Amino acid sequence: MIPSAFKFYKPNSIEKAVSIMKDFGDEARVIAGGHSLIPVMKQRLTDIKHLIDLSAIKELKGINISGKSISIGAMTTQVELITNENLFKSAPVIREASLQIADPQVRNLGTIGGNVANGDPANDMPGLMQLLDATYKLSGTNGVREVKAREFYEAAYFTAREDDEILISISFDAPIGGYAYEKQKRKIGDYATAAAGVILNVDKGVCSSASIALTNLSDTPVYCYEAVGLLTGKKIDDNLLSQVTKSCVEQSDPVADQRGPVEFKKYVAGVVINKALKRAFERS
Ligand SMILES: Cc1cc2nc3c(=O)[nH]c(=O)nc-3n(C[C@H](O)[C@H](O)[C@H](O)COP(=O)(O)OP(=O)(O)OC[C@H]3O[C@@H](n4cnc5c(N)ncnc54)[C@H](O)[C@@H]3O)c2cc1C
Image (cartoon, rainbow, N blue to C red; front, side):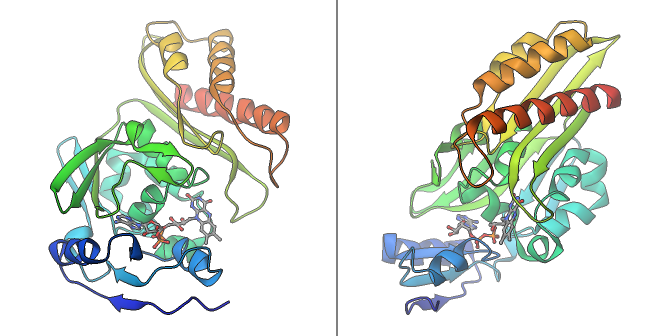
């Protein structure tokens, strides 16, 4: 189908983009890679009268690493996340997860900002950003504010972002320890049936800190606080990892859809979580 008529804007600064959003409110929408937005426009599931292309705003692009602090511009593409060697050295889990997103065509245009701002529970980056305890920087008519990724997601496609706000960047500290991002999908290029990210910091066999987040196992990404509590301070063995897996699965809340019924999804969740825990432990 063909989208309904809209006016197209290509501002070269964040201020200009925010001012267009202020003028047109709910009728305006920013576009990044367009992979999620263009299909819904073409199906006329959304009626956007003013489309604001962010691609000419230089401040929204790039990966900055200073010591352990990492900041990624919202318009940075997934392929840039994969090919940046310094990012790989500081946070290798990003490459591991990004390589499991869709296919090269999608990753060439799809941006980290569009992926996390969309609020799609099937997207991998929201869970990944919870894993890394990332902070999102948003700019709107009331200025700039920061929101933790773990507090950003309210329901499927509903986030803490206000209508007049643009996501500018995502920042986090380089993670320490072993890592893994495990994803089960029906076929190459598909979204996750279930996916899990794990970071484990282990000292003489004892877990000193951990992080675990799940993708597409609820209407928002799931951060497994209880499971992290079970792991921290304990000597790691297969029995503990099974208990931790069980706790994560209990926290998940998937819905039945074309990827399978709830019981199947919970089973797959257990498999990917346990694999991710074991691989992160091996790498720690
Ligand atoms: C066939 C296919 C398979 C896919 N498989 C996967 C997968 O397995 N895993 C995965 O994680 N993703 C997957 N994706 C999603 C893809 O990776 C993109 O990240 C996603 O479509 C959104 O990124 P985008 O840059 O294209 O955003 P757009 O489509 O341009 O925007 C998406 C939404 O976010 C808003 N937005 C974009 N940027 C900003 C910003 N800076 N500030 C505020 N709001 C903003 C837009 O207004 C829009 O509402 C898939 C996509 C396709 C088409």
